Length: 192
Ligand SMILES: [Zn+2]
Image 1 (cartoon, rainbow, N blue to C red):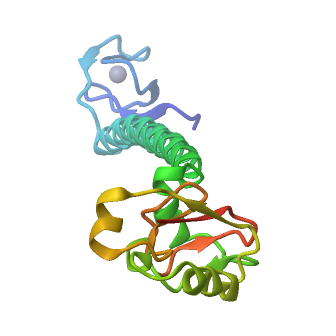
Image 2 (image 1 turned 180 degrees about the vertical axis):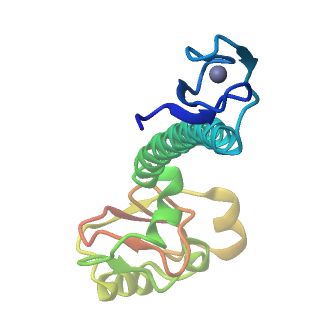
């Protein structure tokens, strides 16, 4: 018996016939009768299996497509996040080396070969010039200059006595205890 054929018996004459399973009408060459064929169970099962297989394949294809879409979308999200991350990193790096954010960078960047000041600028106010100069030299600063500023009103109150009123490091008089500077930073001690 060939594939795709069904073995049947003619209902009129009883002859054995092989017919194609796709045909709906059986013609008996022995007695000439025609008969409508109902699908046998085996044929039905074959058809259902085939349909189910097709459905599964379509489903697989659908999920494969969906998976690809999700993976693409995920990759794009990662790419965008990475791009934003790189931009933020560049901005932060540029910012870290800019003067206004130096204090912020001081907290995170390595301080190898740098000096951490033990006083804040404002605490130097009122010290004698000698005391202030000794203090900054002791911290390790070598580039110290002094600047005499006549300050009539204060001198009236305190008298002229080489009293410090401002210390700046690299132009920053707002430094605080714990800030980091290069040893060759310019320290200007202003006194009256
Ligand atoms: Zn027949």
